[in-house]
Length: 278
Length: 278
Image (cartoon, rainbow over all chains, first blue to last red; front, side, top):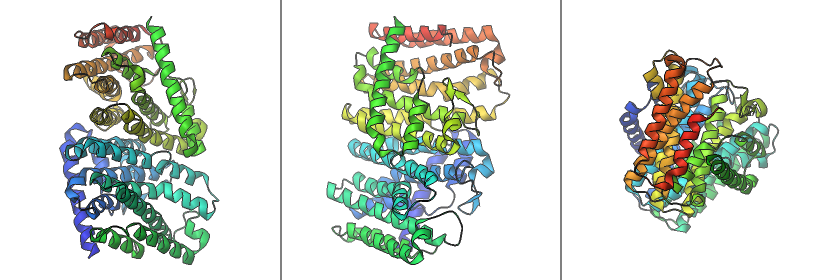
């Protein structure tokens, strides 16, 4: 069952990150270490699981891409900490607990987010480089920086701030930068590290991008009760929003058409995300 | 004269960054592009010049390390934008103009800083990788992430927040993380990219670290009139502060003892920084 697969992979990622941060604890100022550990609590670990599952889809070993998988969780966590800051969403709760700035103060939250970005790059450039060929690791760093940067996630966050009265197309553009870019980079990274051919890398990248868009629409549907400003689903209505999420999930599955049975977990994951209730 | 060398190298770095950002302008949301361009105005370009001068000290070509040099200026600029935010220094002026958050708002300033980090890594992982061997580029990414991360710059910023009544030794530890780590990574990166041997890389790394500490002490001395909380110089007095900056500059020069005449510009730069009046 996909739930068991997800639980096993989540456990792998969490053990890896816990051991890694513990090994580095002595180098880090205590507050920074505590704030980072706190921010990492909870979470579905979707992005790292996508790295692992993409590698496995091409016959690779999940263990061998763990440093990069862990880095994706660090990048995602940085984005949550900064998103929650008073200057942006001013959120009190995240992952069922108080936000980092509510517990450690705004300055420490800003710096904890800032610290997670180079920490993620360091994981890839040093730990992944012990396992994988240099050209693949460098390509992954290129993919990740593009997905995180002004043409990717940060660009999407800024557009979201500015487009208060956007149309559905503009919102889909925002979602593809803000959310889908990093998910696409995750599946592409798993494929690149496993030595996938160009066709396979493109297919898995595309899968992650479509899945990321679908994921964001499902988030919109699940948050319909809460009033957090216009979302894609607010603009097109619940029924059309769900249809679009289904269409995008279909497109994600279509991208995997040329891959064999190794991609079964990725396919199951896409269907599971579409049906999720939280 | 060292001033002419510095002006020529500063011009190289600025032209490179200007052309690079112009080429990427279409991909970036306009506000983000404007905020980044604004934040990059002014500045001595010390860190990128250290990358170039370290490469030249080993007989390398400054042109061939420009992407990495540019990346160091992006990293430094991110740190200034975030340092100036209300959650940290709450500064109104930087590089003789209003701070980024005073012009573009706090949210855009936070995101512009966030964007500069992956943009810098992308410059190294893609543009530097077109010029230099993959193993050297990866090693530079490792060096840079360590210098930027929780054991480096961000760690120093956090310690500075917490140590309101520090002793001189604790402050020197903070300075070495907050300021010197990135300068040391800059000279080490120039050496690594130019194919320096381990002894040369270590010597140039050490040069940058000592120079960085001296640089911060000179900053303290120049800021003595302003009342911005205790600095090393406040604690030990002006005379002892200047002596320590001189001692560290001597240590930096000592690190270059085994290098030949190629390091003349680096030596002149160290002496020039010690005598600077602004």
